[in-house]
Image (tube, rainbow, N blue to C red; front, top):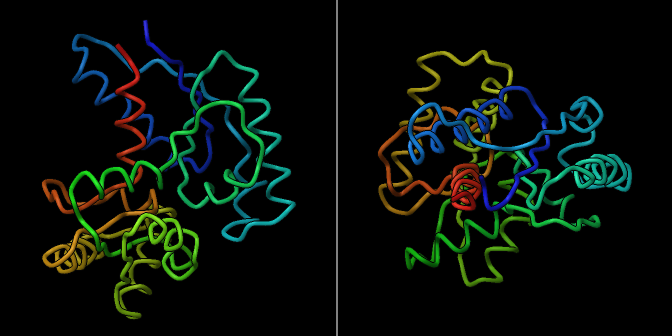
Length: 221
């Protein structure tokens, strides 16, 4: 039995499936056999949420609050949201259960590694807005951004990953940019689409989605 039951809010198809796959993979590594990660899921109609992103609004608050209220009626102790950008709205609404918050987990990881400066990769909105930067700065962490050209590429890569239209050449270019920036500073990935196709074996990449997933796994016996 698990110590805590995780409630997953189902959102965009590819990102949600990525979380489920990784939860099952890591849980199976931990437990062995044919074990799969125990969780419950409320599948939202993402078409009611995505058109309102990335900016916060009362309309988005209302939609997300409705889904969270329904999720909290289930037998859960912890909530996992497979969308990094949506956490700015999560911070604005009333939630009774524990949230596996990617920003909190990323700050803990950065401090644990004794890093004081990071490069942020995310959607164009996430990179250029104040939400993540302000949160990190409050903890003494300096946030740097890729060049304007690279920010535009990263956002285009994110869009193509969401649409499942990425090509091997596009993935190779994404890996090249990640490796370039991580040579001098750790890179924080703040977008699930950037997590899905990230390179493996680079310990200077902090993946917010992976931190959420690992924290969910750590709550099980």
